[in-house]
Image (cartoon, rainbow, N blue to C red; front, side, top):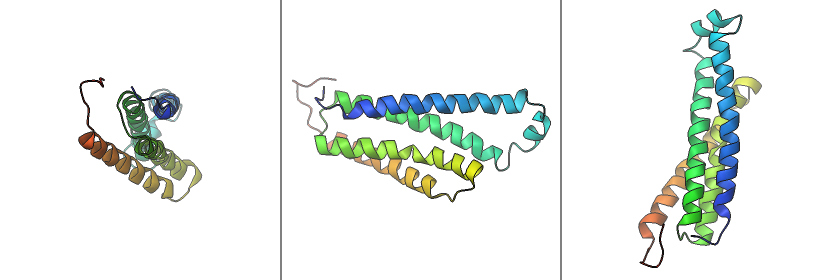
Length: 143
């Protein structure tokens, strides 16, 4: 197990953001099934902004789960400290993608956060993959 607490932030923030996107999912269910204007919501479900809302919900939960998994692996595996910090920060920055989608829908902001978040999660995943391939796990270190 790593002696670093780097992965704890990914697990904690990942769980927190997952709760928020779960609640957002419940809001989407309410709008589709119970809101007084549900027929209009359903009619527009495959076009903006409803389509983007579903994208934000799905990507928010996926990227939260990725942060939880990355955090656990960073705690359990002998990842080099500097590399672990970069992977952790980039994975957390990946959460900007679904937040950016929501900021486009509700605040009419440009998609800068979406692009930064998307690039960050891809780079974090690639760095982690490279680190795992290069990792030397001998018999004294176990998962």
